[in-house]
Image (tube, rainbow, N blue to C red; front, side, top):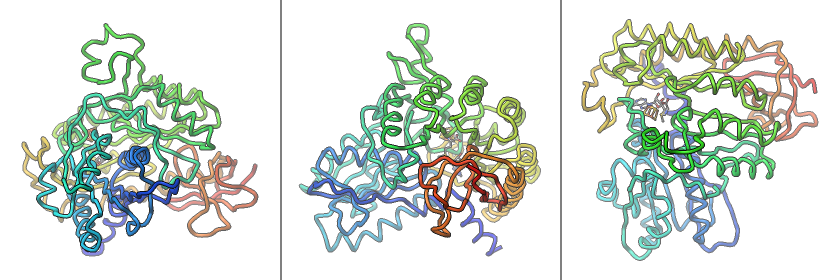
Length: 486
Ligand code: SAM
Ligand code: SF4
């Protein structure tokens, strides 16, 4: 069992992201002060750190990759699983010594953990000076300045309108080829296991014209791929009069020119056929045929959909409050195959050991995986989060060992399916966008095909940002290997 659990810790990829935080890089524009930011958890958080860096830059701060050089350290945190919060606590304890030797250093906790714990964080973590939730980043310069004068501060106000639409993010850790664009904030779904609606507030859609402007600017600077980010992108809905989904739904007859996600996708795709467009995350209850047909219409909209199922059993899905059942989910997958074909990549998120899940219900997840044949999945065991519907209503009654054993079952299944799916690509000609050097050898480059799979090729005369046509000649469960044909 020990070995299996170790494997799970490595393979469960979003957990890996949680431990493997991203930091700021060095930006020297001659500002006198420096901030260092670590981002934990999902891409959304990383994208938020780029907004934070931009706000701080406008207020006299450059970024640094070395926390020893920093005047301000921010940890942009995740609360999605208990382990994510424990990682941040551990990291804070490592910063204790640094703060002792440099008392003027300001330490801030941002993001979901800040929102969830509020003032409590200041009480529990004495080294922390500022606690700021995801909708209050504009207040950061003010709170940091107050902290420099010795006054600790908290702002966890959740807005119904804030989208940071006017802020041009500072690109951090950028490969200069792909960038993330946040298109909406918050979430109006109430999945019973999930803390996001409590930490990120109500769903709001960002002005599509500001999204297109940001994508155009990136393209003009040489970027070749944008990923549109939201907790539930298919639910994107904006009108000039209203950007709050709940209010917009109530007064739809009274507003003009509603733009939905399919419309937005088309607007971004039209910037240039050489700009690839991706998006994440799609919700099975909201993804429409209109979105699928828009994907089909534009070659530069990548044929890849992240469509988290969470469980393959309808009773468990009902308890999770996902608002779809197994049949609905499988119908959406059939539609994807019908409109976009077998080559469209599909990935998922799955949770094992949710409250009351039986062995048979766990088997339903495995059989659903066999039917869908996911290209890859992010897999987790259930972690009860305080304040969620599940924490209030249900007992977290599946023993940890069972949760982990079931997780191992789905990881083994996914590994086989990934290999099976990758083998189907062998012999095919695909277009890839080159992202940079391969980690293993400087004579090789790493690119990505439309279905979001990594393809390794020999370097030749190619470079980062180039498109290349390659023939897939070999694969592992995680990687394709290609030969350049043009
Ligand atoms: N909005 C996305 C959706 O609906 O699929 C997912 C957002 S969440 C940040 C990413 C994933 O974390 C979820 O899809 C779910 O699989 C997992 N997750 C969320 N809460 C969890 C919990 N309490 N325990 C284990 N995994 C959880
Ligand atoms: Fe959480 Fe569900 Fe919203 Fe995704 S859709 S962020 S899982 S509440």
